[in-house]
Length: 247
Image 1 (tube, one colour):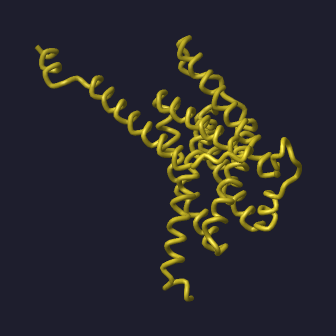
Image 2 (image 1 turned 135 degrees about the vertical axis):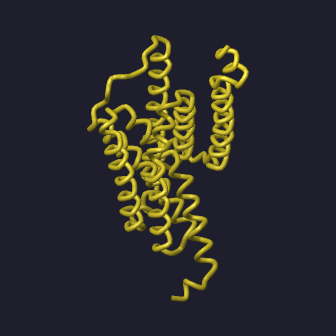
Image 3 (image 1 turned 90 degrees about the vertical axis):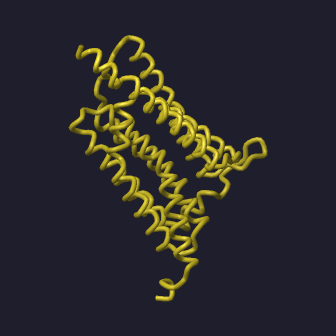
């Protein structure tokens, strides 16, 4: 029970939990965007399955630390560059995220150009398959980060569970917001493409600090919120306008 009075353990748990929440943002955004392509009655179920699988995969990987660390061992060399299983997973996941984000952006622009307000519902099985692929990639990235920051397995597991609880509780709110605001959806898709580029870079051993990505996303989100507030002000009749209409 010495851990209760050890401030270093509590600081490690708090820091890792906050980091896991931040790293889970891209996971929630992807699940929300993909789930929104389903009929409304299936969206909640898809989000629940997707985030539950994300939690299960993280816990499974944490219970297989020796195997997960082994993923960083070199498999072969290309142009004097070592390539491991982790590199291949990050490369494939990053390329998939870039492809998916680009396709979604193209569909959104095409829909706006032809005046379409709705798209054909996607297959439930296809949506879940896409979520599983990205859950796998995000889980490996998340667990590798946890291993580097904490020495106790129970701290890693606790941090992951708390972070996933926050993600589950916020998923519907994020999903509804993205669904109601097309410009916010475009921002989220652009962020996913950026994350995909970062994953590809990691797979090629060119690490892009995640702080830069999330700082850029936070700044863009603030600008988007200001734009939405300004749009709401323009769309809301002023007192003088209402008085003139009454006259």
